[in-house]
Every structure is written in structure tokens, then in C-alpha cells.
Image (cartoon, rainbow, N blue to C red; front, side, top):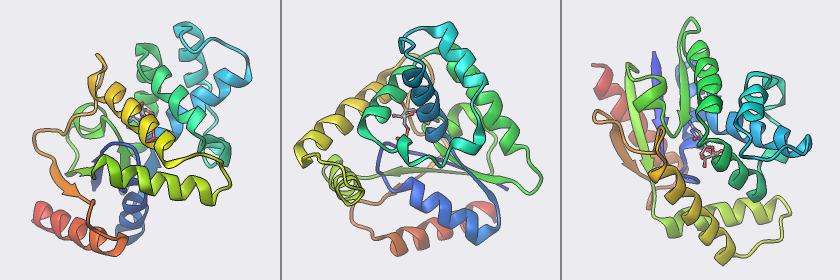
Length: 207
Ligand code: C5P
């Protein structure tokens, strides 16, 4: 079974994806971490973020062992990830990796921005996870301040709004729900409640 999950930053899809993978015994891939890793490695080597050739090579060289790096979870890397994510060569290399992951025996939960539309258009179930910008900024602010980052709610709100606008309007693989995606708005749902709704949607879709 392949479950494709898309949605904007801090919509709750990451937490949900991990829970669903555990519940159904599937592999889990956070594709945002791949784009963040490309950005991290470009910055570390002092390469300009718009150097498409170098970015594509960096994407092909990504070490999957480094995707849990807490250094990926900073606002600076998020911003840089959205810049390299606009480059065709980067997307091609990372989509190849994601499709290989999806083809693993048993299936997977894959989360990102273009999973239901581009990476796995034939997924068994597609969820598009949304939440209001206000709620998403509150969640991300809590997460970052708890991790020790010194950043205001207003700064986070502005960053998330700008990054989403960039992701939704870019030319290649913009963030849009697939036509056959089930919409799940988590603005007023806690983690447990969102999980229950998702399991119900998946159960109905698989029938
Ligand atoms: O999901 P996360 O916030 O970690 O993603 C960071 C950035 O990577 C996104 O803002 C987006 O620009 C890019 N991304 C993408 N396609 C994906 C996953 C992430 O373009 N499938």
C-alpha cells in the first residue's frame, strides 16, 4: 500500500505520516528532509543556491543516513530548501530516489508537496493535509522555541506564508491537491483526532 500525503509547512502531515506508517507497518519517507539536505550540503560547501548543476549533483549525492540531522530543522534551511526545490535537476534526482523508496516491498507512507500529483500519482490513498496559517505558525513557533531557537511568532508567520506562496506558485511541481486527494483540515484537531480521521479516510478509500 502506498499512502501519499501532501500539504503546506506545519500542517501536521509529518506527525500523522509517522503514526500512519507505524499503524500500517509501512516504511516512511519525509521528502522535505531530502530538499533540506540538499540545501544544507550546498550551504556547507559554500555553493550558490541557484547553481543548478551543482545543486543537481548535490541531490544525487545525498546520504540518506543524514536525513535525521536536527540541523535540517532550522528556518534558514527551510528557506534555502524552498529555493533549491524550484530547480528541475534537483527535483529529478530526488523524485528518482522517492520513487525507488515507494517501490519497496510492502509499500510506504510518503509525505511532501507533490507526492500525489507527481511522485506517486498511482498511490492507493492520497491525503492533502491543511491547517490555517495562524495555527501552522503557532505549531512551528512552539516547536522551534522548544528546540532552543530564538524567533518570534511574527517572524515564523511571515516565513511560513512566504515559503507556502513560493511552493504553491512555482512552475515545477507546485503544491496543489491531487484531484483524487482527500482533504484533511487539522486546524481544530489534536494529533489523536487527526489520526482517527486519517485512518477512517484510508479505510474507506481502500474498500
Ligand atoms: O516539508 P518541509 O517543510 O521539510 O519541506 C521543505 C521545503 O522543501 C518545502 O518548503 C518545499 O519547498 C520543498 N519540498 C518540495 N517537494 C517535496 C517536499 C518538500 O518542493 N515533496
